[in-house]
Image 1 (cartoon, one colour):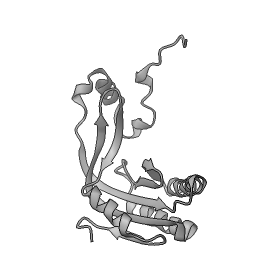
Image 2 (spheres, helix red, strand yellow; image 1 turned 60 degrees about the horizontal axis):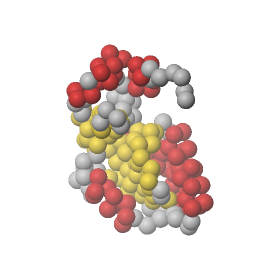
Image 3 (cartoon, helix red, strand yellow; image 1 turned 90 degrees about the vertical axis):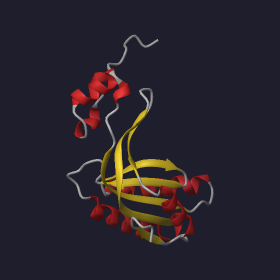
Length: 167
């Protein structure tokens, strides 16, 4: 058995860019007072890779995720063969629009007819979601169901820039 109990107060790590150590410690002490969600612009990119079996999906997802990360994106969720990423989030000092568009172009150039992409900028929310036993710092996109439907209607090799009205 491991003899040391980890100290959660030292585990703020990457969160220190987005929340003060004092707020983080207060949240750990009293999870019922979770910080409120904040309104903000969310630049997102949702992609789906061609499914020709496990190996092809894994390889294409790895290529796509590497490209996202190289363009300063953050992978928020991955449910193979689909990935959701954000750009500029959760940092308010970075404009994610150009990063998102550059990532979209890189994905389409690299994976061309093996990928489809919906991307856009929406007014959303972000913050901590969950419980004291499991929480995530995530964006919340309005009308995400519409974004998923849009992705489903695209053919491989196509991309669509989504706006708030879903056009």
